[in-house]
Image (cartoon, rainbow, N blue to C red; front, top):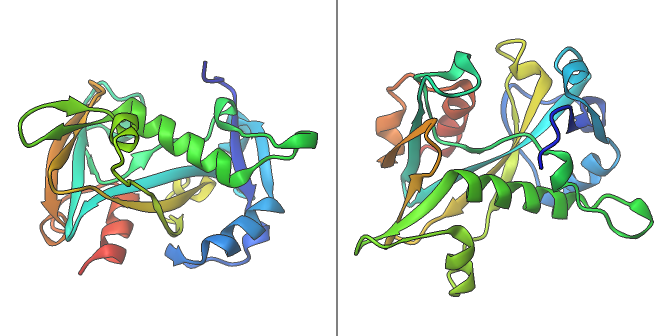
Length: 216
């Protein structure tokens, strides 16, 4: 069960000054800096504290120059996002995602992997060309290599909500014989769309930043 009050964040100071937008970095660099600043805190307090970035894994599903897009309906919990389109799957890292090694040391890579896998399992299914549906775990169990590729940190300074969050950006290439679709009723899938076509639309801030970064 997800905890309603506690989430994971990182201390911004440990990463030094970041540019507004996408900050590419090596995954090893990210892990080194995050290990010095990994923090489990009360969500209501973190919403008001710009010294921390609430850490959200954010994975973009790709097929070449196309990305999976979806639209949030009015049923979405965050009404500021209702009606807007997005290209990222993800959410807060919750207590259930935190992976501990021996001596209560937090495994950051394991925690990220657990959070990403949970979010994808909750939100996305996959449909084959013949109409059969399957889940991410089943694809991997059948030997289809779906590996998230780390790209960098999303630093959105455009509004108060963005300034208390850090996106941990990944992309994941989906085989052409499968197409993602949305499992949650709050989301309406739009399918795989060319990056260039999406850039003319009204999108969530993070999606705008990501598409500019990924454009061919």
